[in-house]
Length: 418
View 1 (tube, rainbow, N blue to C red):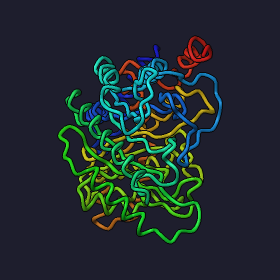
View 2: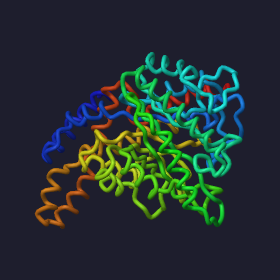
View 3: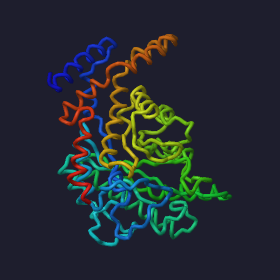
View 4: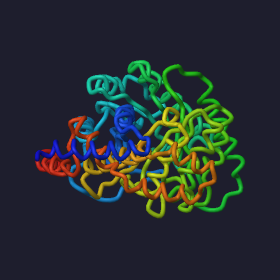
């Protein structure tokens, strides 16, 4: 029997199994077509970007590994992204950092950047059915230091305020051009390596900077803000803590970004979903895999990631969440890392959509604790993978492990020659 027939047969069995639980797998497949990841551009080149004056990666960020084949320029980056996209079912967005502008060999400081340096990205997005998202970039710059938007030096602070304002202008232009809001994330690394007595002052400056940045309303972009528990080299104090940004987002009606690597290891990012959505309009996800700290390992279908997606679906909040990825691994094939992480996120989502939540919810409300636990355990063994295989088949991308050989061939033909 041909593999396609086996996939179809397995799907029909899965469809019948799930129907017994009141779950429509055909509907889930359609929902998956509307589930768009915002792929992060920085996986392909180890967060280097294309600034002529680029320095070493800083701001507490670090990429490990020296696997051959990283993208060296904008053309190679775009080529790698399109290759990765061809192996991931569905249609997906691209998340750009400001340092990935098309500067064409020109020195452009970050308070001088404008949309002209991203017009080729806008054109590329239209040509390749890819909507764009955006990020300001406060790290890896001579004026970064330990403090940017919270710096006591007004000159430094104004430099980063201007940079972030210009990034909002770029994001707004992207959103207008693509006919869909561009989601722009603001994250700054600001903090102190050791003891500090000026916490209130730094946070006051950060609040004032954000107020100035967000003063002008934009029609075609959405702002999101991202906190962190600590940064490497800035372990003692983080200006933009979770408390700070959660309060700011709630008060100012901003999207809150949940980065799965930015919490204490004993915290559950999944549990934040139902809590903060009571007070903020939407959420942005930056999904990675922390290993003991914010190490940005490739996303896999592990328990924390699965629980995050389950919580979103259980809350009925799919339309209030934007799904981005945020990891960078230079130790393995970079396109392979793209595909593994993206497909893992999709698998977590399809499992969440296939959960017989309505049935289990009724049991919980009725006080049937034993039955709830039993059904949740049984749901783990239902044939969700047959539904994901069908999703891949319908989208004409490799099913199962078939993508490995495709990436190996691309490595042989393309990336190994760089």
